[in-house]
Amino acid sequence: MEFSKTTPVLIYGAGEIGKSVAFNLIHSGYQVLAFLDKHKGRGETMIEKPVYMFGAESVDVDKSKCVIVICLSDGLQHKSVAVELWKEGYQYIICLPMNFAVSFKKRVDLSIRYNLILDGQFSKIKKVESFGIYLKAQLNCMDSVIRRFGDNYIAWVREEILFTECLQMWTGDKSKVFTTPDNQNINITVFDGYRELFQYLQGESNGCEGYWKSSALEKTQQEKCAMIEKREELLRTYEREYGLGLEFFIAAAPQTIWNERGYWNLQGGHHRMIFLQQRGHVLFPIRVRKNEFDVWCNRDKLKEVKKYISSHNKNKTMVPIPHPAFLNFEAERELQGNTILSEVLRFLRGRMDLRYSVLDYSDMDGYFARNFARILDGKVIYAGGEEIGFVRLLNELLHVPQVVCLERDKAAVKNAYSLVFIINRSDLDFGEKELQAQLDETVENFLFIEMPTEELEKVDSFIHNTSFQSYRALHREVYRGKMREVGVLLK
Image (cartoon, rainbow, N blue to C red; front, top):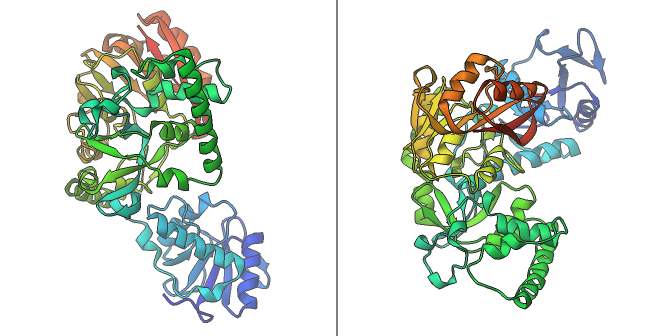
C-alpha cells in the first residue's frame, strides 16, 4: 500500500510517544485521524484528535485502507498488539519487529522504517506491506548464513549441536589433533579444560590443570609458563576485538565438518568458541561447506515442518530449534547464558555411560530426548502430549529419527531408565507420594526435575519416601514470573 500525505493514519498508544509521532505527522501534512489505546478513550482527545478505547469503541475508518502506527515504549508488546489489530481487520501496521520470524535483513529494514517514523522522516517511507505476511514464519535456510564465498558459508549454529574435534573425522593432518580422546567429539559446553584456562587468566581460579590435561602433549613447567604468556596475549586480543563487536569472530570462524549424528565437529578454533561461550553466547559463527550445509538443511523434511507450522498456526516453540531456517523463530527458553542443557551436561560429565537409556517426560518440544540421542547409544524415549506430532517431525528434520515418540498416557513408564527428565511440568506435584513411588521405580540413576523455588521443601519429602539418596541444584531462572530451579535427584 502507498504511504503518502493522503493516507489515513491511526496512532496506537495515546502516550508521549504517540503524541509526538502524531504531532510530527500532522505538522508534515499527513492525515492523522485518531488514537487507539487500551486504557484511554470514551470522549478523550489528544492534540485535538479523538482517542478510542481499543476493543470497546469502534473507529469509523476503512481498516483496509489506513495505516496504523504502534507507539508503545515497550517493544515486546508491539507484536502482540499488532496481532490483535490484525484480527480486528487492520492490515497495514508499522511497528518494531521484535520476535518476528523473518530474516536478519528484514528485521533491520523494519527497524529502520520504524525509526524513520520516530525521527519524523516520513517522506522516506513510500510503501507499507500487509502485516499478514509476518504472521506466517518465513523459514529460509539462508537466514543463518552470514557470508558466502565459493562453496563455503559462514553461518550461525547453536551450542547444542557444536562439538569438539573428532580424530576419526579430521580431514587434515591427524597429527595436529592434540586433544585427549576423552575431550574429543564432546559438546563444547563440557569442554572444561579450555573454560578453566580463561577462568584462570581472568583471575577467577587459582590454576588451569584441566587445560593441560585436555592436551595429549606433555609439557614441562617452563613450556607451560611460555604457553600461558601466549594465551594471555590471545585473551587480550579476544577482549579487544569483542569490545568492537563480533566481526573478528565472524571473519575468523573455524572450519567444521558435519557429523551424521546431527551436529558439527570443530576443526580448530576451540579457544574462540569457548571465549564466546564464557560471555553467554549460545550462537556461534562457524565455517561450513555448502554440500554439508545442504545436508543440515534437510529441505525435504523442512517442507513437512513448514506445512505443520502453517496448518497449526504455530508461531513459537518452547526452545530454539538448531536448524538454519529457525534462526529467527521465536522461542521461550534456553536463549542465552548457562542453559539448562549445558548445566545438565556438565553435571553428567564423567558420570554417564554411552549405553544409558533416557526418558524425556518434559514439556520442552522433545529437547532433552533429541540432545541425548545425539550422544548416547541407548534407547531414548520422548513421552509427549498434544505436540507429539510436531516433535516427531522435528526429530526427523534435525537428523535424530532414532528417538521413540510415545503418547504420554501410553508411554512405558514401568520400564526403568538411566536418565529421566521432567522439566517444565507445572501440572505435576512432586510432593505426591504416588508420583514419587512411580518415579522411584522408573529411574535407575538420575532424575532431573524443575519446580518453583517456594516448593523446594518437596525435595526432602521425595528423598525421605524413596530410594533417592541426594539432591543437587543445577540451574535457576525466572520463567513466567516465578523463580524456578532445575536439579537432579541421585540414587
